[in-house]
Amino acid sequence: MNIILLGPPGAGKGTQAAFLVEKYGMVQLSTGDILRAAVKAGTEVGKMADEIMKAGKLFPDELMAEILGEHMDAIPSGKGLIFDGYPRTAPQVGLLDKLLSSRGRNLDHVIELVVDEDALVERIVGRYTCANCGDGYHDTFKLPKVDGTCDKCGAHEFKRRPDDNEETVRTRMAEYRAKTEPILPLYDERGLVTRVDGMAPIADVTDAIEAIFP
Image (cartoon, rainbow, N blue to C red):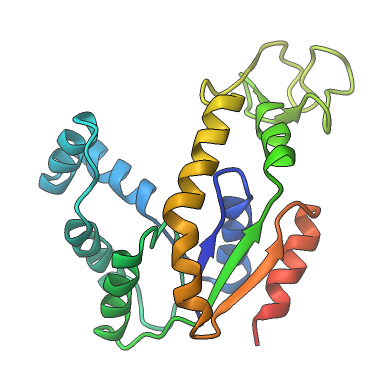
């Protein structure tokens, strides 16, 4: 099984991908993680990626496809792939088709986690973590049992991601709608798209995704 997980930031793609990796032995290919790892490792591609990103330029599609292909080559053919964050644009759809076909793979499903923008903003803006152990909390949905004290480790310091603010979240949503949503009709034409309610409880989202699999 080779699938694409689509949805705006905060829709729960990472959570669901982790489940699929654990249960089905699939491999998650996140272009963001791949680029960050290359930058950290200081590889030639990493240095190039670092320069491009620092300059605020878009990463060239052909170069990203080449890097992705190298990662795919290192994965046994019997393991399914989860593409997270790729493709994002119509040209990348064509590049992914070539990457898969040249390696004897097919794309089986495109799963879109559908979210309500206002509810997603509330979900993301309200989240914070324990600064010591990383346990997650939320202003509305999951407060510590004792105010100011982490349930897991008892620490008293918490932190929020600086980009978890309404303006940033809505900008990301607008970018997703503008760039990524246009690729859905391309996959709809092939009958590959299944839409799942990303605002449902995590376990229900997982069940809905599992129901798609044969």
